[in-house]
Image 1 (cartoon, rainbow, N blue to C red):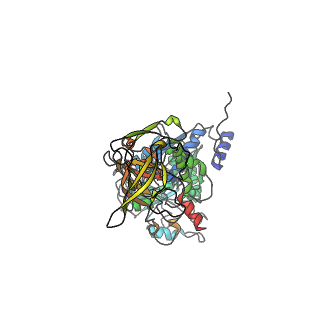
Image 2 (cartoon, rainbow, N blue to C red):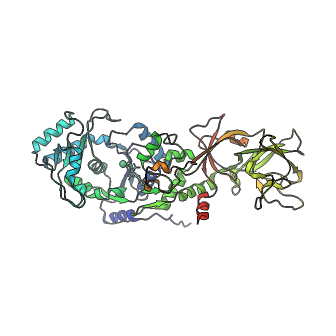
Image 3 (cartoon, protein in one colour):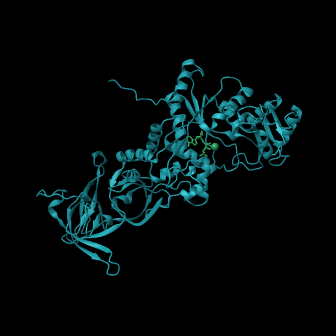
Length: 563
Ligand code: ATP
Ligand code: MG
C-alpha cells in the first residue's frame, strides 16, 4: 500500500529552519519555546504562536518548551500560569517535562549582568525615568550620554549589589547596557537591563527587588534552555540587534536566533491582554472565560473546538505582514468541525404552544430521530411526540407575508422527524392580542415524513414536546465589537462595544435527551446553530447553553446587503 505524506506547512520560518538543517547549524537540532507572560489568560493570538512553535518542533522532530516569562512582578499570578497550562494542553500540545519559568533564572541572569559590568559593558545610572527618555534622543536625533556612564567597574559592582540588597528606592537607579547613544537603532542606546521594583513576585516572593527587562532576560533564557529558533512577533524586529548584542557579550556559540512573524489580529475583537484585562476589571464581561472573549478559555466555554482553532491557525499561516483576519474565517473553521462532530438535537428558543386537537390526549409516541443526517454511526435517540408541542414563535404567522413558507392559519408543514400538521386556529390573549397558542390537526398517515398521496409541504420545522421537554437558558452571542478594528478607531475602544453582543433567553425548552448532556458538550440545535452546555453557570436543574456559532455567516449577508 502506498501512502502519500500529508502536505507539510511551509513558510519563511520553516525555510530558515530547512536551511539550518542543511548546513547543520545546530547539529540538526530544533528547539523552540512558547514564552507567555503570566499576566492574563491566553487568547487566540497566543494560539497562533503555540501552533507555530509546537508545530515546528513536531515537524522537525524537535522540542518545544513552555516557558512562563515572568520577569515583571506587576500583574503576574499563579492563576494566569494555570490558565496558560490548561489552555496549551487543551489546544493539544505537550511540552513533556519542559515547563520552565524565567523567574528560575534570576540568579543566573544576575551573574550575567555582573559579568557585563566587569567587562565594562554595563553601568548603574541614576537618571530618572523622564531624564533617561529625554537623553535617549529620537529617530532623527542622536541620544546624549548619561553623566553616570563613566562610573568605574568597582563603583558599578558596588551599586548594583546594593540595588539588589534593597538599599535604594524604586526608580532611583537602573542598570544599563553600555552600547551606543548615537546608534540609529534607538533600542541600542544604552537600554535598561534592570530596574528596582519592591514588589512581591508570585513565585520568588520578596527574594528580589530588582527585576530584569525583557530584552536582557529573554535572549539569555533562550540560551539557557538551548533554544535554536526563538520565534516572536514583529514588534521585536528592532530589538533583534539587542538580542544578539547581549548574547555576543555573554555567551559562546551555538546561540539561538530570533525570527519575527506578524501577530494575529482578528476583526470585531481585541487581541491585547491589557485591553482584555480592562474589560474584565470594568465588568464589561463576566471574566476572562466569558464566552464573548477571544481568550481560549472563553472560546472553549463558547464551544469552539481545539481542532477548529488549530485548523484556523494552519489556514492563516505565518507571514511578515500585519493584517486583520476576518472573524468569519475562524467561525467557519468552527462550523466545519462541528458540522462533522455535533449531534443534531431539537430545542425551541422562544416557545409557542401547539395543541394537536385530533391527537389522542394520553398518547405518547417515541419517534426515532437520527443524531446526524450523514453519519448513521452516530446513532439516534427517541423523542416523545404528544398532543401538546412547542414550536418556535417565528415559525408561525397568522397571516403570512409573501415568501413566508412556514406555519400559518390553514397551512400545512412537516414536523422534523414526524407528522404533517395543519393549523386550524389561533388563541390570543384578550388583553394584548398576542398569540398564546395555536391549534392544529395532524395527518396520522405522514409519520414517515411523507404523505401517501404525494402532497408536498413547503417547510419542515423543529419542535419539542411540551410536557416532556426540559427548561433551559440559552445565551446568544454575537461579535464583541460593532466595528472590525476598535483599536484603530478614534476615542476609547470600549465605545465600539456591540450592545447586542449577548442576548439571554430564559424560557427555552429542550428535547429530553439533553438532560444527559455534560458541561462542554456541543450540539447542533436543528435550524438554530451550534450550542455548548456552559461550564460556568450551568447546573443539572438549570442548564445554560451558549451559542457557539450560527449555522451560516449572518454578518456576510448583512455586508452583502450593504453593498
Ligand atoms: P498581548 O499583546 O496580548 O499582551 P503579549 O505579546 O504581550 O500579548 P506574551 O504573553 O508576551 O503576550 O506572548 C507570548 C507569546 O505569544 C509571544 O511569543 C508573543 O509574540 C505571542 N503572541 C502574543 N500575541 C500574539 C498574537 N496576537 N499573534 C501571534 N502571536 C502572539
Ligand atoms: Mg508581553
